[in-house]
Length: 250
Image (tube, rainbow, N blue to C red; front, top):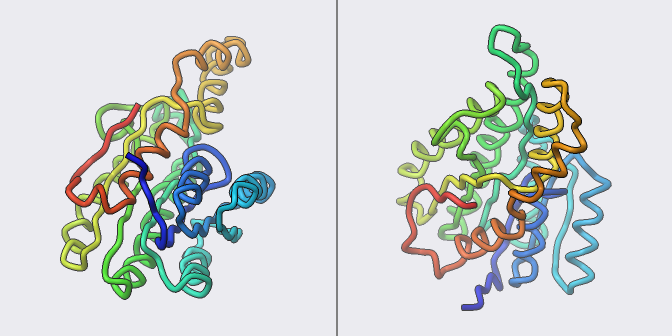
């Protein structure tokens, strides 16, 4: 079944690399108008070029998800350029403090991860909901993880933030259901993203191992972001209207 998103407007945070970039490319290929934000402008331009070269429609706006006004401006860009928001994907995320025991874990590191992963998600959802309400409904897909939902993580902060995203969705989904807005927590497994590969390298260095070798070995068992993007494309479509709850992927 070919999934189509023609006529839909999608906003994606953290779409310069990883799951966010793969999703932006997949959504545009399916016919959506894509507006994406990130602080990584160099890789964002690569994502934008891939979309435009493929005949897709997209707009990039530099967005720091820890700053509420910038997230609001990203939603505003979608409203201004394309008339509103039908789909939101919150893919912006960081992982810091891999393999650090809690009594050595720096508060500043913990706060930084919570600010991006959890508060950034909160800001995006907060400002997307009114736009979706005006459009008559929508779909919100919040990227969490198996970490903090099914099990732990290499990072105290990362697991805490992703567990928080899961709790946020479980609370808000009941608030927005009467507005014809469907929400899902997406929990990917191990993927070959810059975030995951960076975590593997950092853990290897902390353990006195060769970081490059650890990354090379891990690649054999990691999935690809494009696979998750295909799942997210289905979930954003009308074909997924009967789907509910958490979604776990490879």
